[in-house]
Length: 410
Image 1 (cartoon, rainbow, N blue to C red):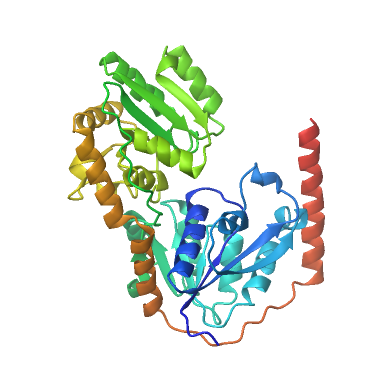
Image 2 (cartoon, helix red, strand yellow):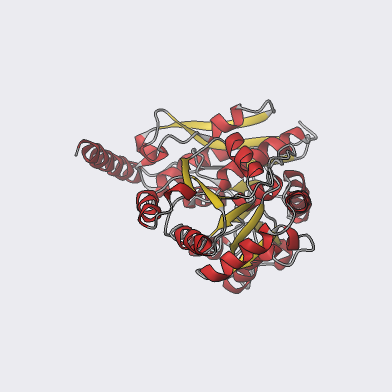
């Protein structure tokens, strides 16, 4: 029997952004620090319809040479298009193979939460609330009696969670931003007269408000600010956003790069002066962390996560916040940071990232959470999903699969 400390991560199969990137990074970092690490997921037998070309978590983990114990089940359309209850059953079967008492960190998926809490007497469950969004508070309300700890990625999420589940023991409610691997320091900003702006994330009006980028750029142009904006990412609003830039005569001022690799994003951030974040709401933006780590300043909306660091001792030279939709204030904050010497912006941004967002700092805080929770010892058993529920899930998956196939042909 191993004397190592253990931790497990239970996650849906595909990389869907900052949450899943952190799940992989944290698992690898814990393994490298000497923990006995387990990663539980499913492996698609063929690419899921919802994958849209994204990597799986298993592919992300395979890129690093670390010792992680993988617990997986093969999954096809019956999993992707079946019921949430069926997916939870598949996850719980894999989870039950863990050594009893291993703390389990959950991804942002309702089937993952349902699976984990069904075995809470065997494994201490750590639920992570990744955004100031209703879906997370509903999970906290539904499962607050089964989870051993709740981790909030920002102070606003923590405060709102306390309001929504006042009965939850505050001793097991923590605020921990998802950490990142800090890239090597580079001196990418040239200090030339053209202000290099960048946006990283989904191109979407919902949550991200990317339409505000046009308004910001139009106002910068009217103020005779020489700038260029690089938009990294893609989404349903990209065609309309490109059209809007064209209609406003701003095509020369913007480049749409689409999704880039993590290394390419980091390189672009290191060459940029300021990251723009226009969101209606967030949890703790990974793009903000990555920008600061690359020496790139941040101007973002005063929402969950960003607001936590507006008055940080290092923020004056590298981070400013504005009210959602306030374009005048956004441009004012951009100009203020643009007038800071580029070298000072870079240095303070990196220092802020090192102090608050490194994966090592994140791991240390999670270890404190795990040290405070109660151990469990009950053997893990999973009851078979009743036949009628399996048949219903299977029939539903067939119907959904046919619908998707017909839509592709249309």
